[in-house]
Structures are given as C-alpha cells and as structure tokens.
Length: 118
Image 1 (tube, one colour):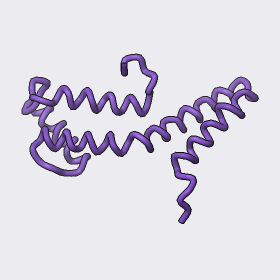
Image 2 (cartoon, helix red, strand yellow; image 1 turned 45 degrees about the horizontal axis):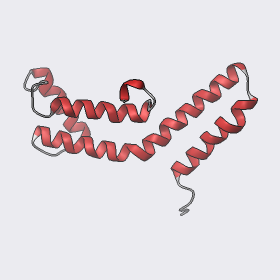
Image 3 (tube, one colour; image 1 turned 90 degrees about the vertical axis):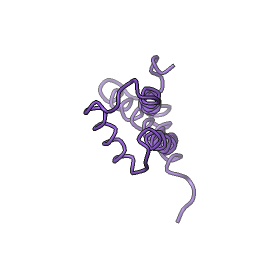
Image 4 (cartoon, one colour; image 1 turned 30 degrees about the vertical axis):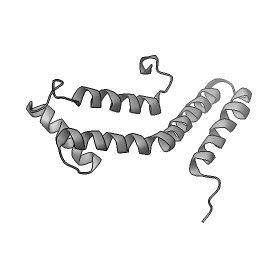
C-alpha cells in the first residue's frame, strides 16, 4: 500500500494544476468548465480535511440533545421527527446552537468564502 501522496494531496495537486496552469490557457466555455472542476476539487479537498471532525462533532451534539447515541443518520432522523411533532423547537436548550454550528460547518466545506459565514 502506498502512503504518499495522500488522497487530499492528490486532489490538491490536480486543483492547483487546473487553476494555475490550465485555466490561464483556456477561454470561453472550456475556461468556465475548468473553474467548475477546480471549485469541485476544492469542495472535495475541504470535505476530506474538515468533514470527519465536522461529522463527529455533529453526532456528539445530537447525542447530547437527544439523550442517547446512534448513527448520525439515525440521530438526524430522530431530531427531524421530534421537531416535526413539536417535541423540540428553537426554545429547546442547545438546539439553535446545534443547528447554527452544523450549518456553519457545512458552509465552511461548500462555500468557505460566503460572507454570511463570518
């Protein structure tokens, strides 16, 4: 098994190549598609570097809010069910903070330059 380069390093190398070498040589539709590809690779890169901690933190917050452990999917489904049924709402201690942090974490991966993130 190869230890180097990591998946993150490979993604970053391709993104950097597209941005610094290929895009300056491209025009029109091809340049647009190269920007889209570079942006997609940026999302993949951030998902690889930030995603695991973000998901772990989200799961821990949900377990604390709901009072038990489970998979992230199970906990999110239960939270949605409780909100839908009126058993939890923004007045529930910790819920608003959880929703805000989860949103911030997702935006940091998808659109880190989004002005509302700051």
